[in-house]
Every structure is written in structure tokens, then in C-alpha cells.
Length: 256
Ligand code: 3PY
Ligand code: MG
Image (cartoon, rainbow, N blue to C red; front, side, top):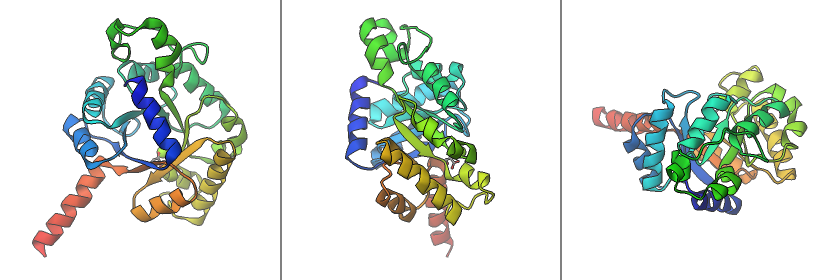
């Protein structure tokens, strides 16, 4: 994904809320449908979805062609996957289950070239236009523009919140309400008062340090609730869940 698109996305994020679903399909056509629907970004899910790096590369191509920003949620801080998805052109990586500052440093080391990190160096990759991009620009700036999105979704992360937020280089903090609800002993109850309370604690800490923050919502009402509290990186539902909801409504209508 080119530098200009990432810069424009960062500016949009500063101006207000941006919206994007997770994607768990392996079909580039679905990514195009999401773009044509007006979503700003899509999170290609390698934590809970079946896609390989090769599939993600095709999905990134369709995102670029149709004008939606492709973020990849990687399975962990594993350097091998993070650098591969950036090599194939992800606009950003979203790293789940971060619990401490050391995890953020691992993600930074895997996703940034020096001096910010230690990402493995190769310019014969899609992200560098297979070597046609000026190499100094690619290594010193273009590649390091890719977004680093850090997911906080458990009590351990809350305990280490200050040290996590003090690490330079995080673009967005993302709160996973489902894992957080499990960690709080109320699995799946994402509107439970304890989940709201802990989410608000993270949101306030991020806002005090001027770090963009977002979460996962499944209704417009939940989205509005969190936007009013200052969240801007709004992930909304999952492509296949949206398909299910639409299909179910139609079938219920047809059969009523
Ligand atoms: C969570 O809720 O735990 C997520 O990771 C996003 O759905
Ligand atoms: Mg989660």
C-alpha cells in the first residue's frame, strides 16, 4: 500500500471516526463489496480467519484497486508473519493479545526498519514495487509509515497499561471486547458494566497521551456510544456476519 494512502488514512483518523469490518473470507470480490459500501478500512484477519499470506496478498490487491485501506490482523507478535504481510503490501499490522511493553517492542522490531526496529531488509517485494521504488525512501520512510495497531484485551494489559502506552511508535490502540470480557470472567458479555469500565479506563489513558483508540462493535448504537467517548478507529462486525444478517433478514421476510 502506498505511503500517500497511509498518510491520508492517518489524517482521516485525526479528523474523526473511520469504519471497517473484519474480513474472514478469502475472496477478493468481498473486499470490493466492502469498499463499494463505503467502509474506510478492512481488517484481514489472520488470527481467527483462514487466510495465508498468499491469500492476503490477493485481498490487499483488491483493496487497493477498490479504494479501501487493508490492515492485516496477524496471529501474534511473530516476526515472520508480520514482515511477510508488510512485504506483500499491508497498510498496517494489528497485533492481538499484547500484554506488556516487551510485546510492543517485539511488534515494533518486526514491523519497522532501523532505527525504529529490526525488520528483515528486502526491497524485491511488492511493498517496494519489486525494487522499482527508490531504496532509500523505502527503507527510511515509506515502509515505516505502515500503521502499528496494538490490541489490548486482557487484565494483564490493563495492569501494564502505562508502560505499554509509553512505548513510542504505536499508531492506534485497539480494545478487543470479547477477549476482555473473558478475562473479566463474563465471556461474551461485551456490554457488561465491568467491560465498559475497563474499556473506558484504557480509552481515557490513550486520550491523555493523544494515542488514537478504537474497538470492535456490532451495532450502530454501540458504535455511537464509543464514538461519543472519543474512539475513532471503529471496527464494525465481520464480513461473513454482515452477509449472514442480510441473508437471514431476507429469508425471514420471504418465509413470513
Ligand atoms: C475481541 O473482541 O477480542 C477482538 O479481538 C475483536 O473482536
Ligand atoms: Mg480478541
